[in-house]
Image (spheres, one colour):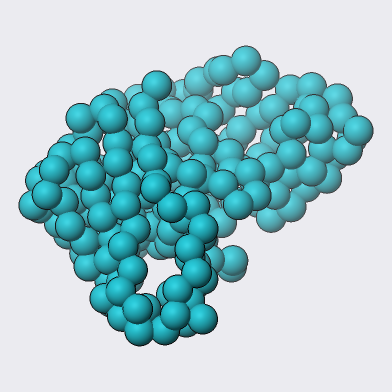
Length: 110
Length: 110
């Protein structure tokens, strides 16, 4: 089975801090995604990557950046965290048309 | 832009009932459709993938159907159990751009 691992399940950060959310997949998938999920708003795409060092903005990229230095790892970076970035962050990769998600990272920004 | 709607938003049934969850989408030019389950505070778990050329897929007590021309998919759960309680989401794949419904929250009462 494909495994997508998000290293942090719960994080609490202060406004203005730089935050790194890490995601690793073990199936050599080319395409990886970062979403955020908020009540009433559903899942919204932040960024996706279709290859190493390649990235595309999703629907809500403002305030975020990403890094894909190795195929298996896709990192989401909040350069200066704000309270409106408190959310559940979900990483996913796709192979054989099946989208596989990690367990999620619940981020609280105080 | 693709819009995905899931009805009902919430459903409560007694254990043992057969039930149907609905997913509708506005643009029929889809690549495939995937059903997910999400437990509280967790990531999404893939249940079934239906390719655009398929009409249905089955896995255990779950059966998903797809009617592209009418923009509809249904997830049928047979003999529901309390362990089926979760939120069920459908996602439409418009060629690696995914659109998610807001989910149906299912509660199966013992």
